[in-house]
Length: 329
Image 1 (tube, rainbow, N blue to C red):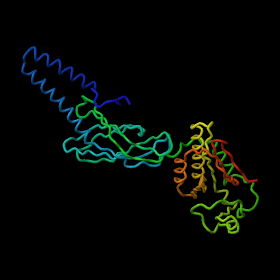
Image 2 (cartoon, one colour):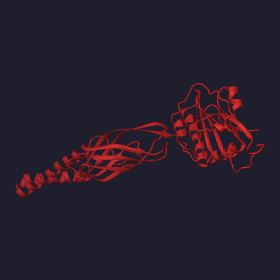
Image 3 (cartoon, one colour):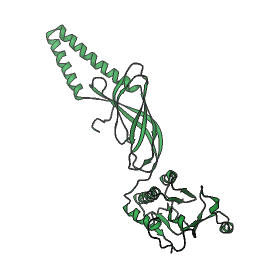
Image 4 (cartoon, rainbow, N blue to C red):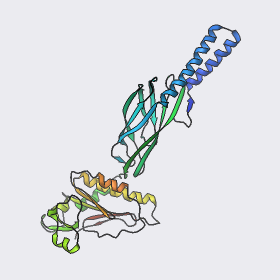
């Protein structure tokens, strides 16, 4: 923004004109000895002093906290709030502008009365997935007369998990329809009530769907999945293996593609399951898929390939091998 600067105070155009006028009047008063000019110069100097005291005292008494940030996606504005307090017992501060690298746009507070608190809506913008920290907010004001633009950096302590960037998903929609489209024609044999595949147990699964014989033979709970359930479910496996020749940008693109695919499936009302190393997360139709996106947001690259069994109708995302769709025969 044009008003941002490094430092504490900057003279405005109005302030420059005012100071030059004061100097001219002071020279005229010295040359003429006119008492009225001396009074005018004294008044103008007093206004300068009052302006400096008011702007400094007002900004010094302001504190800012992040009141809350909604669901945050990389490269997409997230709604939130800032809690702004004026602890001063004297100054009512006007026209305060709050700026930060984490804010999508400056926040204007027209009036902040003394000993008052305001909950101000703000739009946040984060450029990378993961744990983001809001550590500082710069406050600017021209209060009270516009002679000076004063700045004060306010320390803030807030954290938010930023979900991966969502890609343009035209291609992913086509892929989704080929894997688990309820309305699309299916080449799967058998009635909807027949067993289509087996999968690992995830939290929230009903024990009625446990395949007891297979579970007993493997020593862990194995769930049976019917043709009808399979048509309404999506299983995504993400391999965080990052070979040395794969760039960071390519790895992030893979994470974004997986997040976009999961978001599209969730919006279509499908049951979505995300498999990561040592953890499986599931969101049923109508439930929030935020835990899945949170896991993707915090996923770090690994330097060992993932050895996982890819079931039928599973979408496999990997920076090393691209995206594969394992479909049923």
